[in-house]
Image 1 (tube, rainbow, N blue to C red):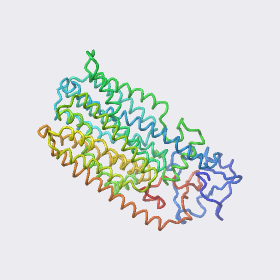
Image 2: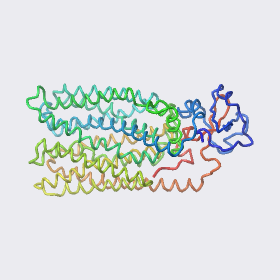
Image 3: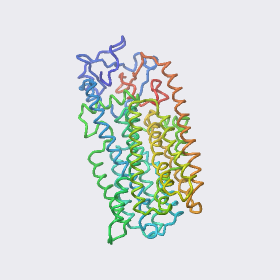
Image 4: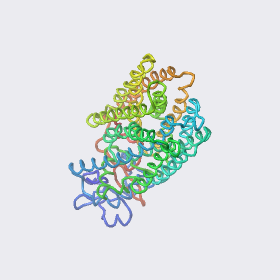
Length: 552
């Protein structure tokens, strides 16, 4: 059945309309076999509001509305076989593209971490505390940059991504000019400012193309890109370390290589990155319509909306779920500096050369990728376990952190193993929660607002995180490990379980009260008439739309 055709028959109030006339008037039309089944009412007729239906103006509807007006009635329903093929195609392309961007995003973030194993500290005058300050300034820029979420709603997402990657390419190349720690501070601040909305943008794109089940299942693969960044970047660093008599400092060669990769990514984004399914160059018109239908039918929410709605922002701020997600990221990301600290920890253990450290980081990243694949496989076949998966994967980092804090310092191999256990895998709960945060929220403005809340507390946590690794606590850094054990790997996953139970209770109430006669139906007001359509096109919030069922 067409996306805009959710009724099997006309009611007494229905007016059978001529398709060509309605197309000329710019109204939404749909076709089933040889007749129109779009229900149209004039504003003076029986009010849909009186019957409990939702009505919005075309200005407040999903941006895909015009595309569906032109193409929806021309496309037949998708068959099960065609849907399987489309699902595989979309997942391979969209997840692959966003994961590649995510990988290079984290490669850019890790430039300073890997440069530390060269002569970067000596050449720029960095110390452990100044290094921490540079990471803190990165996230100061990150917090201020959350205002850039405005551009996601006001401009095509593909253009926003292009500008963003172009700017961060320039900033990465500018790292080669650094000669003092003040310059490091400045560039890290602006890199954080520019990259601040990269992950929300990528998450938005995946939500436009993937069903909730597909998005939950592929979330670990998406994050495997940044957890596994140590594999390609580690080998690049290993190769540069083996260059004899380089013409410039090794860390500059390393930075140029990473910047070059980011430049190539920018070119790819220019040609391929979509704003939404309506302009996806890798899909045919038929596949675009099918993609919109399946996403709207499974999520019950809009794909994209370019009008800022203050009431949705206010609802996001009042919804306790928003703040529970924010609290999770505040607590969990206190451990995030462990990713950057890892190579320095390896070096301080003794009897481990820089080459050894890069190879160990490669192995650590490989372990994280394997874990991400396991997490993906589980969620692909088991639904409603996201909260419990977050707790389960956090337990690995919990155990690794206890071991890293408790083992004797002379047991360098055991400490190395526990650091590798604690460091990379905590990224799986992070991306599961970030994806879940978006899926459990409907209404485009509300989603952006909640993302802003989450990324604000993510940034605040990362302002604090580098300061936990104080030079005076070296080499064991026991206070940092204790904070991570208690807050990041115990209390944070406990909040995920709390969120799961709250949303589970909401679902039980909604399913008990669901009125099947009104299921998926709403009205869009256009040119003085009201046209029946899928409720997903109305851009309602999850609290407005009583048919919205929260993914668990």
